[in-house]
Amino acid sequence: MEMQTWDELYQTCMACRKCPLAETRTNVVFGEGARDAEVMFIGEGPGEQEDLTGRPFVGRGGKFLDEMLAMIDLDRSKIFIGNMVKCRPPKNRDPLPAEQEACIGYLRNQVALIRPKIIVCLGRIAAMKLIRADYKITKEHGQWVEKAGVSMTAIFHPAALLRDPRKRPETFEDLKSIQAKIREVCTHTF
Ligand code: URA
Ligand code: SF4
Image (cartoon, rainbow, N blue to C red):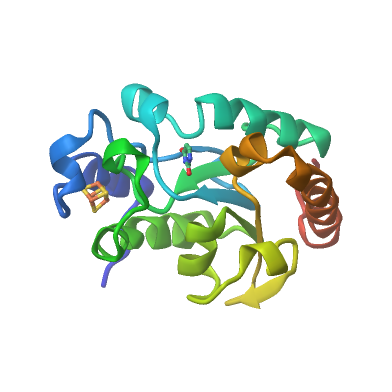
């Protein structure tokens, strides 16, 4: 299949009605950041603020994510932030397997076009889809796996860190590990 350009992918995704989440969304949240990002952060799906604004991670969890990024000298201009599903699941429930399946192609195309060196899954749902179906976030967060030449890891979701501050020290270690990996495999200056 001929690969879509970024603009074609964007247009297709913005008009998408492939799954029932199209019925209840306000905006499709395509994701945003550098088109040549070496690092991608992937959440599970838009929440209320994201649905209202069309932008990823702009609610309370998003503010916390910005703080986490700043701890390792990252900001949104240097990376790409996206989600597994592009439309908000009602009441922020987990996206259903069929919804994930319907939507994952957009993320795969985004990855194919951006060609990142590192993908960081935010939370369990993204890790189970992108790393391994039986991924155990509590045990495996911060560990690295290679998939198709991309270094992949997962950290606790910012919303989980807001709910449970006891998880934050471990996440700080994971962030430092991400910083070390960036220094190892990335070529842009961070
Ligand atoms: N949670 C997510 O997983 N993604 C967002 O964009 C916002 C909150
Ligand atoms: Fe399309 Fe994904 Fe939105 Fe479903 S969640 S309508 S597959 S963009």
